[in-house]
Length: 113
Image (tube, rainbow, N blue to C red):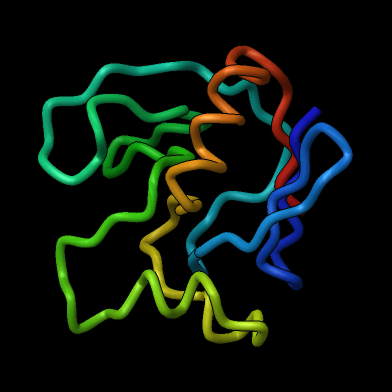
């Protein structure tokens, strides 16, 4: 199981927790992670989708750097969870964290609390 703690802006799996960027619109609840291939630049070719609405797709993915002014890399490293609230609902993690997550936990349960 993968757990995202919204209050702490962390993602935890395999007995380790990592900082994550989240958003006010990040859906709460229980989901299943599904590997999805994407063509959009900046996502590294794939994401781990966990929810979808008529307006949006929500996924865990490598930190998106499409707008340098948002300083997502710096925010991801911040010890202040409030600075890590910036996305439109997706969960952004460091590339190496994403690779670990993809390897171990594709098709696993995701709990966003």
